[in-house]
Amino acid sequence: MGKDLLKSYTSYAKNVKRISIISGIWPSEKPNIFYKSLPYFIISVLLTISCATMNFAYVNIHNMNRVMKGMSISLSYLNAIMKVICYLVHREKLIELNDTINELLRRQQGDEQLLSRTLSSLRFFKVLSMLLMWSASIVVGMYFITPLMIMINQYSHGVKPIRYLLPYPAVYPYKILGGSALYALHYAIESYGCLCLFSTTASIDNIFALYSSQIIGQLRALTYEMKRFTFKVGYEKHLQGLIEVHRKLIRCCQLLQAIHGPIVLTMMVITAIILCCLIFQISQMKTVSVKQVMFFVVYISVKLLQTLIYAWAGTLITTECDNFRNEVYATGWENLGLKSAGHHVKIILMQRPIRLKACSYTFISMNLFTGILNTTLSYFFLLQALDDEQ
Image (cartoon, rainbow, N blue to C red; front, side, top):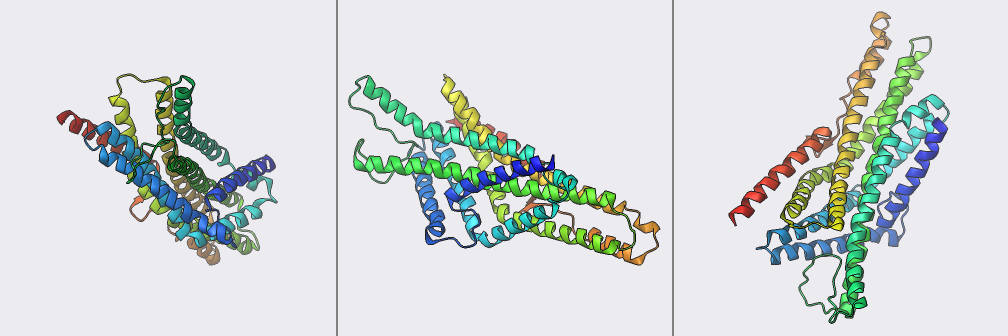
């Protein structure tokens, strides 16, 4: 069981690493110049598309439906930019986190029971991550393919002049002639932007899921070890080893929080606005095609899956930390009359309970998920009221 889970984990980790390398955000200790410069180039592409789509919203300020369309795309790209920046700023912390997680996993590989408990949460997060990756690929794929299909359809039916389209509704500060070299360049840039948006979304959210599942599993393994723990002769060395693992897990949570705290805080605001924009666009449609239904359902699924990964991971980390502390307290140390036993137990219990926070503003838990949904509905009803007044 444990060995099978380890193979599954290794395969999953390799896939996450491959996607992360495309974005230049995988924590490499000795990156070359190209790998170092790749994230900055990606940020410039993401920022270009974000500005162009926001400009589309500004130009069509009197058409609420178009404003929502441009704004939802622009904010998605801004969110991706925030993720890449956080990983650039905290590259050293990311390397430390990756090394510590791998070190703790190696410790358990000799014990089948510990290994199975360490990797017990992997399946759930792997399913969520795979759903997120497939959903994100469908959304960006539809943005990329739809204009091509429309133009091919025009050409096959002899429509002239052909209406040249770009992947995104964007307005640039200069005129782009259809079929020109400038048009081809912008189509290539926006298509590459689709790839960048997918890779940053899939990689960074999956990295958080990967490391969170490991921290949750390590806490479960610690709880299991405390259940089997007895204060027999020479217990000090074993207990000190458990305390050291607990200390490293606290450090991992601090690193995870420092890296992803700003991402979660930004996601709270942006996700609510994007969901509101999407729901508003649906409400304004008089007729809805199958393709449009598929697009909106998958797009909304992407945002909900992203939020669920962060919220559920935060809740599970808190729960497993509390379970471990309860198990430590229930070891029967108070009946031994040994000062050293009480001293070691107090060292663990005096540590602050692990609670992931987003920039010291809010706890990362399932309350985050429900809060975003409530905020989305509030924004939507406000938008409807404003639209009715117009």
